[in-house]
Image 1 (cartoon, rainbow, N blue to C red):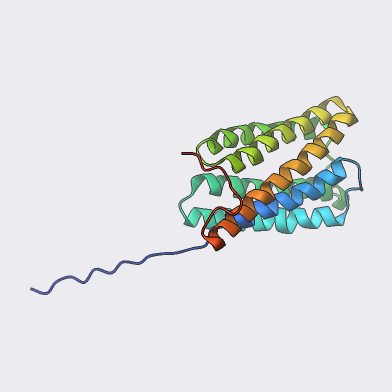
Image 2 (image 1 turned 180 degrees about the horizontal axis):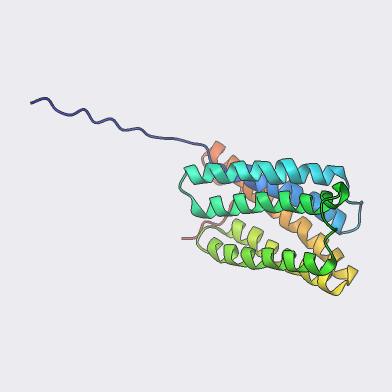
Length: 195
């Protein structure tokens, strides 16, 4: 009797998290420099929202799906579509598709993203300290933006802008730590693995 030949296929794919974190981090910084009052919302921010914050994160989320990472899939795909929806909220009214979002509807939108991010933050308690900082600061950012839009108090939005810049830089740190630590085979930039 002939033995069956067993064929195993080993899939080795790159870590998509740095791509998603960089798309999120750089776009978040640029939008929040605007929120802090340094420049107007313009095509630069909208383009970053579509391509790097939006499409690149969705791609990273799909890649995380292939790696069987539910957290990464949910996070990157959701925040990628957050950026795409935020851009749409800004450009659809200019194109004649619906009324511009009012401060109360924006407050509701941002509040719901804050609730989602709070649950994702709880998930990071099982991953690493770097992601805890990213998701913790992002939760605060969404709630500050929601409160600022709800109350109309511009100082809160300015504070949110500065807090968002820190959030974005924390994401860039987490991304580059993963890239450099993998390349060098040791902790060049610690991320605080949870044991």
